[in-house]
Image (tube, rainbow, N blue to C red; front, side, top):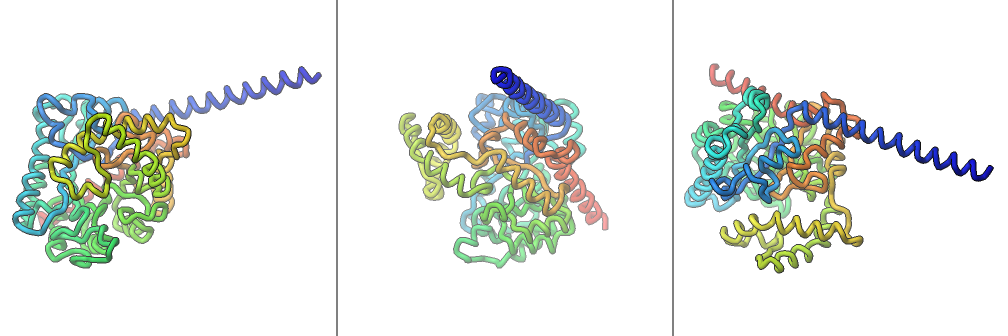
Length: 429
């Protein structure tokens, strides 16, 4: 009798295991169907112009987190490639140097789409372009500008950048610009403008007039609130998460999130570990720090801590950025094999932020971004080839196809349409 009961229990366990397996397969299949059907948009991917040459470019499976093969593998349809310039002195010399850097990045993006891989990727300027290019089977590129610093004090440069393809612009980055205070002012409570400068106020109006989305991911909270008040069009946070879950100045608190909803904008949740779970990120980084240094030493490479980065020369920065992905990849693979390694920030932590913001401000105001090749990347979404894992996690949490489509791009495209429509009204009035 005891033997019979044992056999029944074994059969029951096997049955439950098979049932669970079938459920997991069903979720996987459902997620795959949804992922292939919808348009997936990542609103923030940094670039290095050295990866846009005839011999080294995004048609190859480079160590970069974003490139065409990895986009294909992960089912990522649209990449917003970023024209980023760091903050320097508010002088004509500083503006001129930054302008040269910015134009080189615009040129690189156009070179990819027009010369290097025109049959594989095309630059989109509006939502109609996005849908047309996606339907053709090609990947889509769009351009965002991270820091208006290189525009100097001439508002005509916004039209220049618009004509080059820019469809969102952040008025500052890590440091106060001539247009706006940065979130970094929280560290020492030293502000330059107490929000926006007069030039910054005019810049918001000019972006509205041109049809450029205003990006509030890096400006200070006060600057963001002033932009909300000034803007006639919805705004975006191109790569920010929820401050209630992770108390970092780059994230938006509940007051800001509610203002984004009232404004009709969208917050693109970012897969940047230190903006998702500070405790897990700090514990893991403390553990892997020595591993990365040893890996770099073994490869004969110079290695620097995050604190040292701002003091490096441009040549040192360029070499570090180039080598960082391969060193980190090797380091993580070593850490993964160690039983002592603390857990990494992962896709579940990322979707926790999506859940929080959806609950607070609604499904129509939340989107997705990675900040790949700019510090972003988490376990499960470490590069574009793993993009599907985000959709799978959303399906596991009960999001519908319509909701997932909104999160992955429809919300962003809706804002883009509204910004464009308001610009046309302003231009004809």
